Every structure is written in C-alpha cells, then in structure tokens.
Amino acid sequence: MKSALRPLALFLGLLLSGLAPAQGADTVVGPPSRPLHLPGIENAFQATDRVFSGSQPEGDEAFAALRKLGVRTLISVDGARPEVERAAKFGLRYVHLPHGYDGIPSNTALRLAQAAATVEGPIFVHCHHGKHRGPAAVGVICQATAGWSTNQAIAFMKQAGTSADYPGLYRANLGFRVPDAAELARLPADFPARVEVSGLVDAMVELDHRWDHLKAIQQAGWKVPANQPDLVPAGEAKLLAEAYRELQRTPEARTKGEPFREQLRQAETRAEALHAALKTSPASAPGTFVLRPAEDAFKGAGQSCTACHRQFRN
Image (cartoon, rainbow, N blue to C red):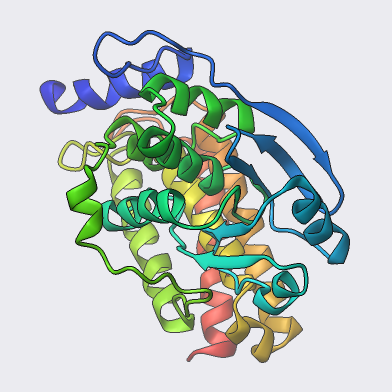
C-alpha cells in the first residue's frame, strides 16, 4: 500500500508547496500573464498575446468588452449552454468543448489544442467562474501553442485561483503531451458552437459515482482507500458539491421547479460541509476513533439525497 500511495502523496505535496515538476530541465515558473478588469467578467486574465481567460460573460457589456479587447473566438469549457446568438451580435464565434472538474480527457485536450491553433484569434477561454476548468484548459492550450512549460501552466492555474481540491485538473496539465501537427491534422476540422451536455440521468449517475467513492473513503476511516489510491477524501467531497452545483444549472433542473433546485442547494451545502470537515480534521484509523465532523456532514449529505429521492424520484 505504501508504494501505491507514494506517487499520490508526492503529487499532492508538490501541488500544495508550489513545486510542481517541470518539463525536462525547464525551471521557469512564472507565466507571462496579467489580471484584467472587464465589465461582466470575473477573474479575467491575459495569458499570452493570443489567449485570454475568465468567467462566463454576462450581458452585452461583457461581449462588447471582449470585442474591444480584440477577441474573435470564445472557447467555453463550461457545461452550460453558450450564448451563441449574443456573441454573434458582436462578431464573436463560440467553440464549445466542455469538460468536468475531475480533469480534461485526452481527446478534449487535443481538441482544445487544435482549436487554439486554428480558429481566428485572439481567443477567450471561459468556464463558469473562471477559476478552475478554464485556467486548466488555458494551461493545456498554452503548452500546445505558446511554448509554455508544465511549470508555467501550473503557475497560471494557481494565479487564476484553481483549487488544489481539483487534482484532476492539475494532473491534466502535469501529464499533457504536446501533440504534433500530424496528430492534430487527423482530428475533425469543425468545432461545435454548442453541444448538449449530460442530462439529468447522466448527472445522477455522476452523483452516484461520487457517493461510491465517499463510501469507500468512509470505510477506510476517512483516509485514502488502500485499493483506490487516487481517491483524495476532501477532493471527492468537493467534486460531489460541484456535481450538485452543476446539476442546478441544467435545463431539466429548471423544468422541475424551485423546490427541486432548493433540494439541490441544500445537498450542495452539506457536501461543502463534508469537504470542510475533511480538510480540517486528521483522518482516523479504520475501526478506531471516528471523525465526528466528517461523519455528521456525511450523514447530512446522505439525508439530502434521501429527501430528494423521496419527493422527486421514488
């Protein structure tokens, strides 16, 4: 078990200490990026001359500001439906390549690299708040198209506020391999302006997946399970909270009405409480003292699921 946990512990140690491993002998740490103040956009940054990032643009003033900045293409990695028509009013194109908080699939990373290299720029990459998924995508894009090292990509993510609670996003950049031109040329040449993301059923499957992970962590005494060394207790709780948050933004959730969304908000709050408990409390050994804050939060989150199922699914 110790050998299985050592790579994970090393990764988390490097991540939290700010000493993420470099590509090859490159020791450059700081990316050539700067924060921006744009109306209707939070957490905006200029990563390179061609790449900008931030939150989802809100209102005409946000799209007008992007146009004034010189942006020509928006790349959304968020699960919500992009405002394609509003963007078009300002001569802006949308490319929709969504991914989750648990990482960037390799095929999506390739498509991000391809899009950044071929669409009309400059580009603006965004997720919902501009802190986690968007900056991770920028790291991949800039490694592929701007010569960034791994360290530069990780440093940008930290500068943008990407939480260590999403280790999959960091791993996506730590393990990214820059594709060659031939590899990109084999990919489809068109990019969707809007894709239909997971519906209510798929979202529920994702929630079940997170709950299975947390049950395994609970059985291990709120530590990393010996047979699942990639599970980070606090990280899994955070991913559960994000799953509830994302579900609230789906059209299906809006159709079910305010009582359903209120149940989801309560579940998100209790998942965040579990995350806080696991972040602040030391883990106990299996079969000995039980982490009461974590157990209470876990029980509360489970009660949210039971109440929601009783009212809306059973």
